[in-house]
Image (cartoon, rainbow, N blue to C red; front, side, top):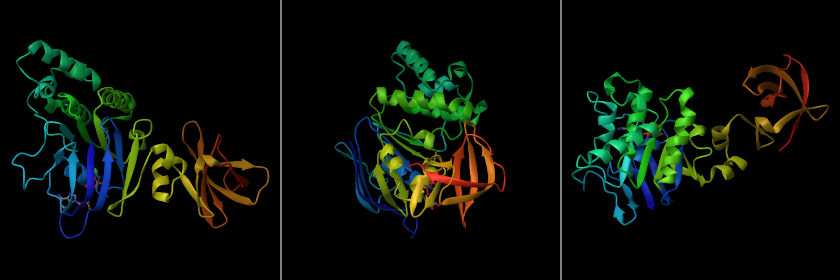
Length: 303
Ligand code: ADP
Ligand code: MG
């Protein structure tokens, strides 16, 4: 398993990460979330051995991960990292990029494995296309396939689906995360997209103020978001009398002590998000239809 003990790091003087400790079991999927600039990519880089730690230790099983000061070559065979830049070889084909690290001694096996990987990332039709002509999303798929080609024990994914369009994201996510689970590959995914987390992550850590704010299962954090930052990850929410109330936990009612005035209705697909004024505060809730502007309404909290 991965063990991170009391890790601290800064690029210059200001600390980026302070006293970070957590563990990830073999085969577990851990999501690292946090606002832009909170240190998600830095944390993945450190786990990969890209930089020297200022303080702390990182272990994968018995192996201590060390930075460039102690290692001539960055990276370990058991670990793969798909960073936000993909580092592909532009002038060779998709299949050649994916097969780059597969042995040439067994051409049949190499071909079968490449075919399997192309299916995982849904790129079979593009096998013989040169990478330089691909879109950003397609390149991201090639990078994913190449990273899992030799079955690492642990994979680090930095916003792995950020370049993939919404038409293909859902099915690709399911395929990739299922592949990693089925093969017992430990996965750490840095993301700000809740869709990358819900249904896939066993646990999530939230980075805030250079530290780990919480480390728990998505279910526990969703059901009991301790701070607005955590709630905001899961969706639209309100703070009413110091309690965090999600937009879907507020309903219209006949009469109540929560009297509000409608400001606007936003179409959201299977519901409308209604923005209203509740005394001096803004309140957001879900409703099945639009509501008329300036209409007086009464609300109840159902949670
Ligand atoms: P995230 O991935 O959560 O958006 P990063 O890990 O990229 O956050 O960045 C964390 C902080 O470190 C930011 O303030 C960023 O500006 C800074 N930073 C990131 N990379 C470097 C670098 N190579 N040199 C100096 N500062 C950096
Ligand atoms: Mg980042």
